[in-house]
Structures are given as structure tokens and as C-alpha cells.
Length: 307
Length: 318
Image (cartoon, rainbow over all chains, first blue to last red; front, side, top):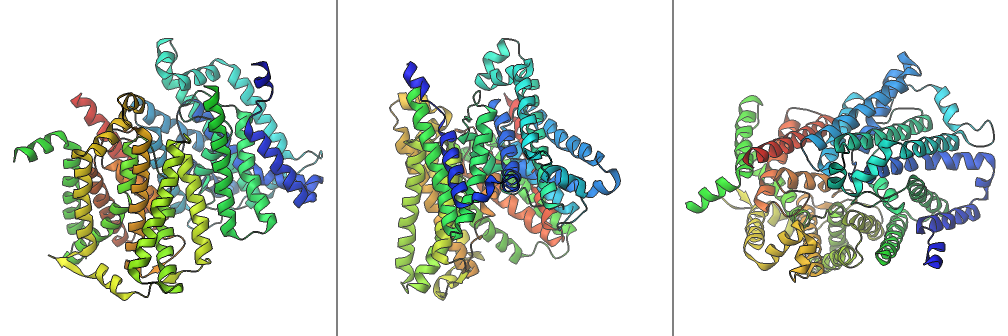
């Protein structure tokens, strides 16, 4: 037993390291401070959405509204930054968290599958974002970009933000709410019978998810410096892949944020490598699908053996 | 008649949905100028037929408690494969059609094997397969849209069979009857419901769960392929994003039709009503001049409101 425990490094880390090394070989530039910074900025949105998906998957739910929330948050920032300045980030956070709370209320009060509720909310806010701003535009202050893209102390600011979020999550996970979230995801019924407020825990999961999504949206804002109402498209599926690669289960109760970060980073770094290889976009799709399939199949085979 | 009475009593939601469709039709007809001609009704039926055929497979998979994220890519792939075989390779339409169907069976089998044998969650399996399929589509098409030169098939799609109903609609009606019969009266149908409501119990009852799942995923791929081919016949060209809108619209139609995403509950008649309603809303909004964003928003609102209503109504009965 001891021996098997020693070598059971989650598959995703190994693949991630291999991919990272391949990326370095293809583009040694990423070892320089500037190259590493730009790589981090590219990975960050995907990592954040994977973390967002992980936090709801731990509680046994799913969140497919990411595209809608990211789009509406970005549009909110783009429309209000001119008047409110930095306050618009707070306003956007309130919007994002509000959407999360409403979704969790509908899911828990009416007992409707989170798949449908979040799908519908994704549609609603995708549409709303497009109505508010049919074409990319709006003004986002350059300060945001310098904060997000900068690296005054060699280490990229984006990496510091990520580490900060991870530490906050560690604190949260140790707290009562965090423990309850895992318990609810593991077995909702027994969590309920042991006196845990299931509805509240699920709401906490959606609030966490919304916060991570807002973080992703803010990074995207700083990256592109304008409000694009369709920039979030495709993130729900990427985030599910990232979270599952990172060890989340659809049945809930398991998964770590470290895993989600690795899974999200893997999804993004893969695109980066394929871009650098300059392969035909047809093969990019095929490689992306194949690596996702292989990693998940391997992870599943491993977890099957454990059981 | 007792059969109909029984159906109305048991399937109140679906009955209400059809009623809602008819009421909506008349409201739109009186409020939106130019809406509600016979030609438009035919058009709505035809558009709903595309959606309906494309989400047969989704319906079956959702009944088993899974989800298929590859329909959009499958539709695109089969459409593109057909035009490539017909135009570039110069094959006859019938031969290309058969090759397309064989390809779809293989793709569906791959999905099914992944879900049933490798135990990969359906969402991730179909997503990764879908991504690869999109790559294949790009590869064989070279990224360019191509048009179908076989005019006989396009003509067949456009012609009206009887009573102003087009051939595609007729095909959809026949398929609906077949699928409803399959779900209600055959062993496979019963097995689908058992697997959906409790897959472990189904296995202990001696049902070969993997076999059922593989069959379902093959059926799904085949119907998506069929929808893609019909779509190519209708628009006379294949593009790389022709199937995209069918993925989440298909799921929406299935859910509107009262099929539970937890599995084991629902039927295809509901999905038919869901498709009709969605297409009606879409064409009414287009005629009112509401932009794309507004249409998506309203579809989302309809979905969430109806699902909440189902839940509340279901609770009262229980």
C-alpha cells in the first residue's frame, strides 16, 4: 500500500510538466521574465474558470453560465469604468455574485437540475450582454492593464493574484463553510441529517464560483482593454474539461483547487503549444480533443482501480 | 378515445405545451403584422423538423441520464462529408449517403464505447470527441464552404408531399412515431428508462447497460448525421458552423419537452412540442425585428420559467 501511495501523483501534473517542457523547448522565450509574464496572462482566464467550475463541482453541482457571467461582467466594467473608475470593478463583482446567488436560489428552492438553470442563465446573460453592447467597445482604463499585465518585482502580478486566491481558498476550505461544501457534495442526504444547511452551502459554492468567474473576467478585461460581448463563449466547456482533468467528479465531494489550476493551465498551455507549432487548425482541434480524451481516460482508469 | 384521455391526464405538461404553442400562434398572428400565413406555418414545421431530427439522439441520451455535447459537430461533419464525397470525389448521392451513415455509426460507437466501457463522463467524452470531429470536418473541407450540386435531393427537400407539408416534415412525423413506439413498446425503450432511473439497479436486473448505452450513442450520431444531410439539402451548401446552433437549442427543446436531465423520465412527444415552441418563438421574434441578443435572452427566460412551472406543477400533483 505504501508503495502505491508514493507514486500516485495525479496524472494531470505529469502531463502539465511535460507540456510545459515542450513549450519551453519550442519557445525558450517563456523563461525570460517578459515571456513568462505573457504566458501567465494567457493561462490566467482558463485557470480561473476551471477553479470556478471546481468550486461548484465540489458541492455536486455544475455551472454552465460562465460565458454569460463573463460577458455581462466585462460589459458592466466597460460601460461603467468611465464614470466609476475602480469602483466599477466592485460593481461588476456585485453583479457576478448576484447572478450566482439567484441561480443557487432557483436550484435549491425549486430543486431543478443545475445543468438547466445555469444553461438558461448563460443564455439570458449572453443575450443581455449582446443587447447592451452589440459590438466590442467601451473604455477600460490603462491602469487596470498595467496592474494585470505588469511584473514590477520580476514575478508576474497575475501569478501573485493567483497565489493570493489560492491562499484565500485554503483559508475558506478549512472554515466551516468550506467543510460543509465538501460534505454536501459527498452525500447531500447525510450532510442534511447531520445538521448542515445544504441550501446555504450550495449558495456558498455558487458565490465562490462567481468570484472566480469575475476574476477571470477582470483578467480578460485587462488583457483586451475593451468590452467584447462574446469573449466568454466556449469557457463553460473548457472549464468543465479543466476541472475534470484536475480531479473533480460529476458526483461531487472531491477535488482540489491545485488540481483545477493544473487542469486549467493544461488546457490553455495546450493551445499555446499548438499555436507555436504552427500546425494546421484542423490538427489543433484533433490534438486538443485527443489529449483531453487520453488524460481523462487515464484518470478514470486510475480511479477505477482505487475503488 | 380512452387512450387519448389517459395521455392527456398523464402527460399534462406536454398537453399544456401544445396548447401553449397554439395560443402563442394566435397571439402572434393578431399582434405581429405579416405573421401567421399558411406558408409560414409550413416553414415553422420544416425548421422544427430539422431541430427535431437533430435532437432525437439527445432525447434518448438524456433519458439514460447522460448528455451529448457532440451533435453540433456531428451535424457539421456529416454535411461536409456529404458535399465532399458528392462534389470532390464525384460519387453518386446514394453512395455518399451510405458512406456518411457508416461514418456516423462509427463515431457514435466511439462515443458509446468511451462512456460505457471507459466510464468517461458523457459530457467530457462527447466534448472531446466533438472537438476531434470538428478537426476532421476542417481537414476534409479545407476550411471552405462548399455547395451541393445534386439538385435532385435539394428538390426533394423543397417539395411538398401532402397538404402543404414538406417532405422533411413528413419524415419527422414518421420518425417521431417510430421513436415514440421505440420508447414505449420495445425492450430497448424500457431498458433506456431503467438505465436512466437507476443504472446500478438496471445492471443487477441483468440488463446489459453498456450495450444499451452504445446503441443509444450510435442512434444519436446517426440522427445527427441525417439532420446534417437534410440541412445540406435545404441550404445547398455546407459550412464549418452549420451545426453549432443545434447543440444547446437541442438540449433546450428536450428539456422544454419535460424530459428530466436526471434521466429516466420523459418522452419524445414532449420534445416535439418543445421544438415547435422554440422555432415559433424564434421566428416570431425575428419578425418583430428583435436582434440576436434579445432572442437568446428571451429563449433563456422561457426555458427557466417553464422549468420552474413544471416543477411547481409536479409538486402539487405529488
